Length: 118
Image (tube, rainbow, N blue to C red; front, side, top):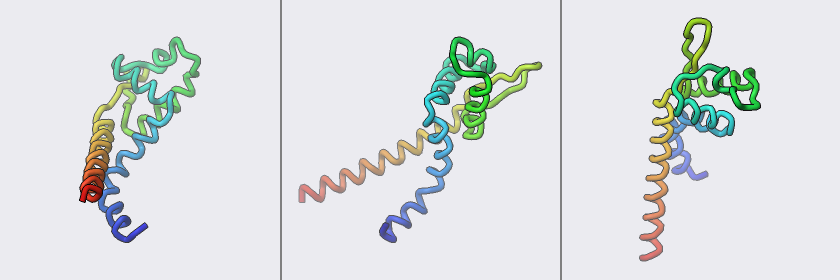
């Protein structure tokens, strides 16, 4: 890697580093499905999240913990039950990171197009 590329990575890394746990958490099909269900259904219990599926409560609990560690969901104690709800802020940060990367690619492609046309 050239020194310039290395320096660019260092200056661009912090915002992307913050989004890496979100992308890692969403890289699993079960967790992605849980996020989709929580987005559509509001706060739900583990029993509600496992209803009609072949996923055990223990497995869902582990997946929810990964999502919580990434800041995508939050567990709220209601009486004896814990309800899980979607937290959109971290997903918005990750979306912004992807948009920034897309702009960088667009700029690089435009520079390439101009170089080829010259």
